[in-house]
Image 1: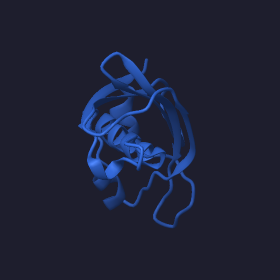
Image 2: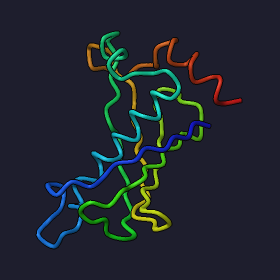
Image 3: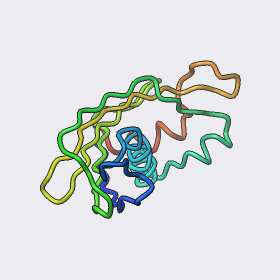
Length: 133
């Protein structure tokens, strides 16, 4: 299993007229957590893209529990619970202290430079194997 924690502070521009984080900003927060989770196992989006692979989002699920506000410090907890195949599933919690703000899940799949679905690169799978037994 892969688990990472990332913190960020809500910027004023990310809030709506009511002072809440605009709901459309949460997928960007999830991306921050996802990129950091992959970095913790030695995988970078940039190197994968330079090698001709992409990871588009196939599915996004979000459940909103509480509102986040301007200047809140949020913790993004990102988990990969199963060994990736031609897809990889990320689960998330975003918290403000003990308050659960959202739970979410994204499913991404691998594509090659021709934008066709494919298996992940062998180097990616080798890095992942150490986290799943």
